[in-house]
Image 1 (spheres, helix red, strand yellow):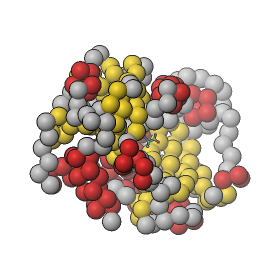
Image 2 (tube, rainbow, N blue to C red; image 1 turned 30 degrees about the vertical axis):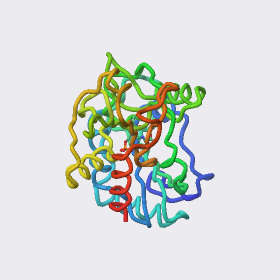
Image 3 (tube, protein in one colour; image 1 turned 45 degrees about the vertical axis):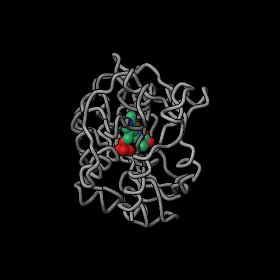
Image 4 (cartoon, helix red, strand yellow; image 1 turned 180 degrees about the vertical axis):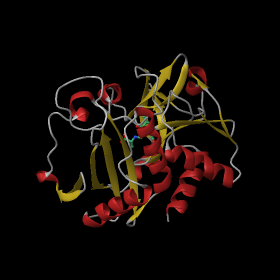
Length: 278
Ligand code: PDD
């Protein structure tokens, strides 16, 4: 595939980054994942706004304007196959002379982007849903920053996979926050509930879209903390992300969610989402 690295488009097997890059040595950087459907970047501006917020939070200067970012990403998807693609971009603090936790001022950020085809959604997903397990949230206190430092998320997801599940739902101080790489929604008595934004979860772009669709179509919804007991007795549980859209969770810790099948509100929202995507 063709990738973008520091101002250049080149074949992925020719792209090289220094071993002194702070992304490599410290995980010192931020990232975004943006879907492109039919050659168009989906919800691009909110993704770029979140990138700006992440960069500002970790004090890395934004290397490009919004217009420059869109130009780069559009060119990237044009250079790569597949009508539906998922763009990954990351900005690290740059390459240092010697290893030092504190960062020297005036480093040139390293900018990398790649794009891969999105596989067609598995029809079995909407029929059967996915399994999830609940795990203690072992991450830091700034989960609203989309940092490339993902070791806790990697370990949590791996634990889920080894338990035969597709995702881990994270519990902090008795409350369910989000998934290892997704946001959380539950349905209780016909109302859609998702935890409010804050430092303990990523402000997902798909999450915002689901709330927007609920508001636009008269689906009762609120942003409220979700206690562990509420999660376990929910009628429906969903997880959302840019690459997976809306996933109905039908098994939680080996027990069925609701009647163990994707629920009616999931079907409705899935339909609204599909329609919106067109
Ligand atoms: N992850 N929460 C976490 C911790 C995430 O990593 C993600 C996305 C989300 C969903 O956000 P959005 O709807 O904006 O994709 C929530 C991406 C896809 C990833 O790391 O690959």
